[in-house]
Length: 253
Ligand code: ADP
Ligand code: MG
Image (cartoon, rainbow, N blue to C red; front, side, top):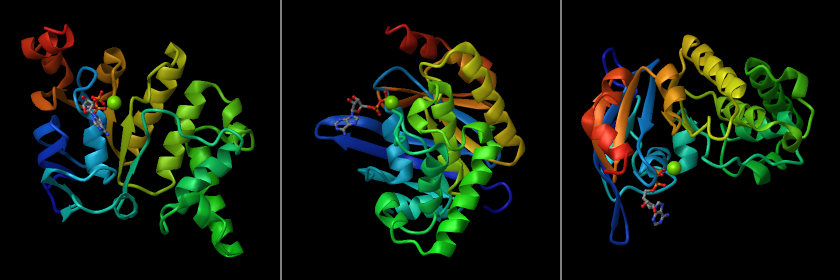
């Protein structure tokens, strides 16, 4: 993006499912190099916001711009190819495939659509370059020793990191992570936080949906808070945490 222009801009985004408004007139922006947290109680519209940004769900109204281009209305492969990668709330690794192969599925998405079908159609040179890139990402996230193990044999914390490596294999400018710390042990959360900081130091931008407040407070630069699809607060983590409207939403008031 041009100087001062946000990397990601969500513009009055709205998503209805039947009569339910899951995301209601949501606007926020993320600057390049920022780790922005998107938080809120269960059902607040966080995952749906991710779906709107990544093209998994069409917007009912409003727009999304990435690096100065309109991406609202494009499909998930096109948006991924422009440099927006994501992980999902529930682990979607192929358990019988190795760590490297799982990450290679992500690398393949840089080309065209259809990871598994597509990977079967690659010629040898393409395949070699994809696996080389996947190996580079596995090393980058610190899982070189687990590279050839089945993904399903790893601890949950390592599986989450494999998912991040798979997203990184797209060579994105922005990664969206949906509850990466959920269910992790304290040490695993620390490893994950360290990884996010290292990625940020490399220039990566991160949009993080997370329930674990301690984790969020430690790793984000800024927070956007949703409740019932509406943005109720935005700002530095400490300020947002002290906001009465935010406390009310979390206490189920
Ligand atoms: P969060 O991730 O913040 O917990 P979600 O974005 O998953 O919340 O959900 C927001 C609201 O939209 C919830 O009320 C949820 O039930 C509803 N919702 C999400 N996805 C769908 C869908 N595909 N069809 C119908 N309703 C949905
Ligand atoms: Mg969710």
